[in-house]
Length: 244
Image (cartoon, rainbow, N blue to C red; front, top):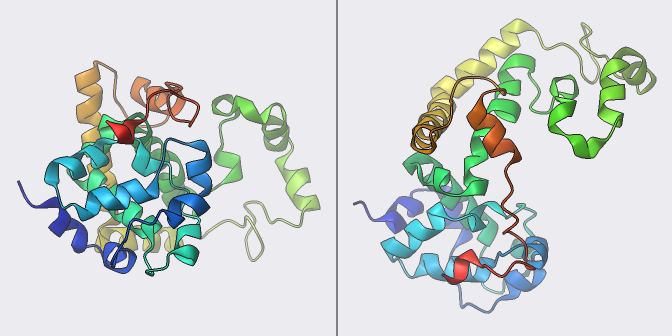
């Protein structure tokens, strides 16, 4: 097995994010996510610094690396100039590349992000396309989102939007040639390959779980990763993954 610490050092975000952690815990004290989740950036950085392959694998398989909101509050406080948020980014990417992300509930949700936010870029030119949101997948929105979709032209016109219109303005229709160029950028930079890797590992996990796997946002595996919550993620839960 390759040395995982060495693989992490190939990521420029890791190089920028970890210089010389003295394990003071200031990052955890300022971290908004640590207030709510079983998440401790100090512990994560300390485990990474150990350069222990087994410990790093545990991190790559853990829910904990997906709790960070990347607000970068840690960067503003670290007395040694570290940025644990960058370390988390590098861990997430390595977890996706090696397929460990499918071993955690939060990690498996990367497929949902890829098939919604990610693929929206190719379809519409926007990662968050309001008209592409399925209200049935967001019951927490109540009736509001469904109303907006049913009355999109009126709502966005009053807000100054150019919904699917030609020309300038928010929510304007992105020309096909621009969408084609975006796809080429992903092809050249490795983004398309990265998306395919997420699909491949997700399919492997679906087969392992005995769940139907196909394209789109209506297959059984997508619904599973999109809706499942084991209720074991917050500080009020008795189980803390990082303490194992």
